[in-house]
Length: 115
Length: 111
Image (cartoon, rainbow over all chains, first blue to last red):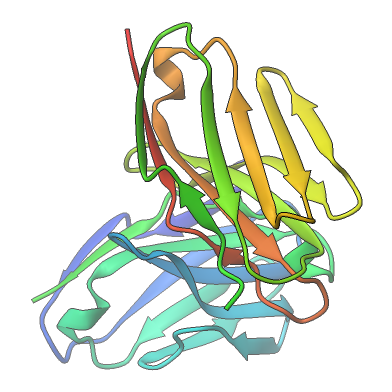
């Protein structure tokens, strides 16, 4: 049981390049989330998905797109990376359909540097 | 915003001592959660306490919630060097309101 996995662990991009961050969970959870963590800012929600095929914007969605491919996988895409998107990105999941009232399980993070 | 704010921002103690971290928030909540983050790692859930609960324990951890003061505290007893990490509170109002994380308390436990 791997929990929540994320790939890649680390990525360097040039401004304007695109990339997709992958996330998968093997706990049969309904809800999945993408956060970014910046120094002194805590975690901020980018997008969340309550179930396959549904997504909802979080606090900082601009510049990002997401796709809930199936129950296990939730990807985050940067279409045209900007230096302001340099951050650590975390994927998380929670069991049911009361996403903000439940324990969230986090992946190890993806460190992204945009030059 | 009902963001939780942890206090202090940083705390340094000796092994064996107790560590207390506080979280204050602005509006009524459904639940409050505490998470730990070791350096370079993801967050790990510690305890969830609901608004109708006043205290919860898990091993060496004790969490209290005072809804009248809109505050929570996390106590780690008999701390160990392995407890060195950042600790975050997260508040949820329920329904469709997003879980909101504070900026964290960085705890250092010196051997």
